[in-house]
Length: 501
Image (tube, rainbow, N blue to C red; front, side, top):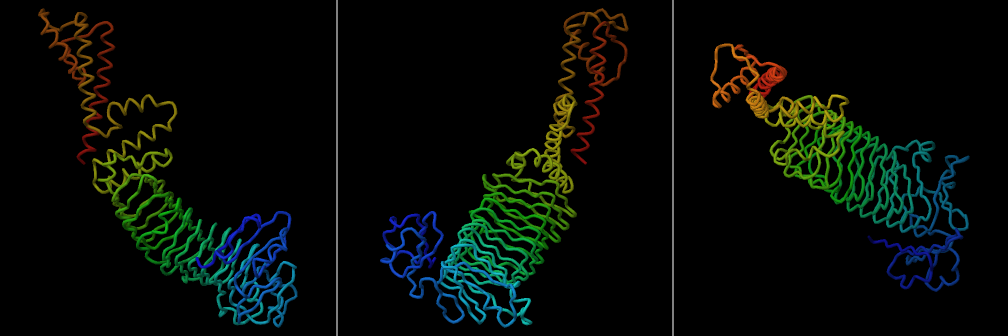
């Protein structure tokens, strides 16, 4: 930056002032400001606030003008609207210096150049001029150049360059915003922007919030860096968004809430922070292709509606991906190769979102004929759903154990074989309590093995020829095997049908 600011708490700590454009020296217990032309004057004011400026137009207790610019003043800024008339309105605009003096001016000023504002800066062009000027809609934007602000609220079109905002900047009800080579060490908040004339170039902000705004043309973000949170709330984008969001590469969170998008095409985006799209609507085709979600990244689609086709695929996915209560009006193509390779781990993590993500994914794969992926994700959905149930978890566990919630014909077959073998062993051990329907007297070991296996198979399939009849406690075992046989045989037909239809 061209402007350099140094803030210290004690005058003793200043050794070389030539490295800075302005030095603000803060002394507790005193609220006055002093502007010093040279370093020698500092010794006179050791218990007050000091500002040293190298600019030759800085003077003690007053600001000097350069054409329409207020140049080189350390000020608090406010407009005094009380009893103002058309002729004297601008005379009532006041710049307050350390002695509570005010500086009068009689023509429209347009620029603030080389100025340091210690307290909050507020500028409301709408409130001041709309009431008194018939050509209000043609007013010029204010220009801020090479300035230092503690905090600023601006209700006007504005061009900002080479400046620093220590505690944030609010721009509201503006028709133009251009920010160049500027740092905002706090939140840059843009509210109710009234046009598409928004340009950022070489700008670094801590947080960026845009809300209650309608955009009809692409935003111009050239080398914008957001270091923490970027939020867009209640905004409408009536153009096709294409490209990458490189300005989020250093950020921690991106939130789009209650926004409407015409269409979007994001490609080769690397996501290493949290993206949250909440209660948004996509009117036309949405495409998120070749996304690279790192282990620190996460994408949340929450309560979102897609009215047209959707494509979601990944170049690599090591982080999290969730579809929570999201609806699709048309076909959605969801990557399955990368997710299947990761065993759907990106869907796991937060229980609230995992269940809905597996449900939405299973419906998407089912619609697209991806049966294997459908069965895998539907099974995981049922597992997560069972965690929230009360009282019948034992039954859910049994269905999961034997059939994977009716999604695996292989597990069902394994369960059938297991049941038949277990009951075969029981019958073989208790072979002495059976009654044979014929004069059967062969009691050799191989005869016992054969009869026990035969009885287990006949009982499991509920055929029941009656040639071997169990007695005593074995009747209960035979009855239970018949019930399991009906259950597993039906389950096998269900899972087989799901697999091949």
